Length: 446
Image 1 (cartoon, rainbow, N blue to C red):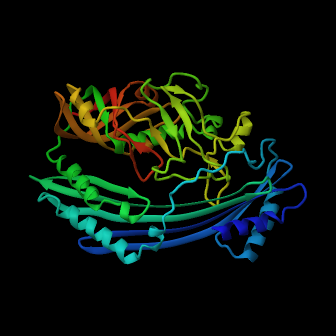
Image 2 (cartoon, one colour):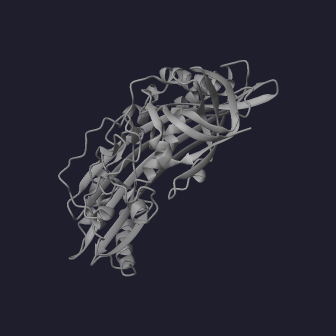
Image 3 (cartoon, one colour):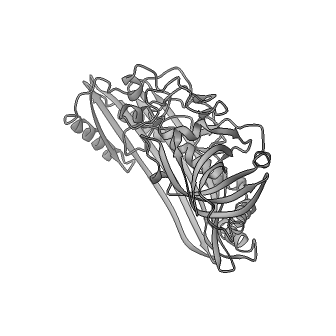
């Protein structure tokens, strides 16, 4: 990692008078293994590395990148960024980030165990996951996929404004999709396990969840249409919260693409809902000590007791509205900094999912949705998505249901959260899941 930072320093030192220069260097290794019927269906081991260079002068920005760490080519990349600057439109807010006196958190999220983990052992994990899933229940007729995935990422950023930071993270996860059949009915189910190193992964848990989520859906029918109390399980709530987090980007607000624009300080969710973006939480799969501009990441409270407190910013969007960056620049080496949430979660409640369901006389547990991202309008907040799950009757889970849609607006759904579970779980995505009880959604079924 020190090599990456030295490389950044070398290019920054070539800045000419009147220039701001930023260099981002990334080195990443990824492995993906898929097992199928006791064999390795695919194995991909990829290594990528590269450098992105920004040059800013007189409000103009030039950018260039190269997928190599070869010094001669990187010198050419710096020259290319300078050339591109001549074609840019001047922007009074265009400038590099400057140090803000907040030191990056010391995060224990880089594990040598994963770096040293042999490919043979990764293959063995995928095969074992497939075997346990297949044998989890007599009604399992196949495993659609059983995957092991990991990544090792190192990043360095240096600028003429005084930023010199590095970050390193490892992460891995198992995922399985099982197929169950009974009386001619076939259903699919998903299970996973997430960790920083392979010894964190729980093969049996991932297999058991996939088996349970498929077999309990056997015999599912369409529910009646109407307005109904709905419980979102963590896998589903994480997807919704990820979309909500996306609408809280300062960039989305400034481009007129956020349903929460002009609503800072308003009550936009139920008082039971506190929404946080905290990449310094080592439990988050996407935890990182620095953002895409090299600033320290930090805990940003987006909604406090349902009140909209903050949008996330990089240095550019912050400068446009006269505030400070929230350490929320996101990017790869081949792009300029965007803005986004990095590790969103809801502050968990006090009751378990079973206790929450026990308090519902007539409702619906949603355990899966389909086409959610294409089914949400990020400006109006309207959504309609296909779903599957289980009826709730007199405080207990009842018959499985499928082939229905749930619909509302994100604004209304957030305001109608009546309870938050204590089961916060981090998933291989930018948002954590938790059981959420929604007072009412429109269900379109039979």
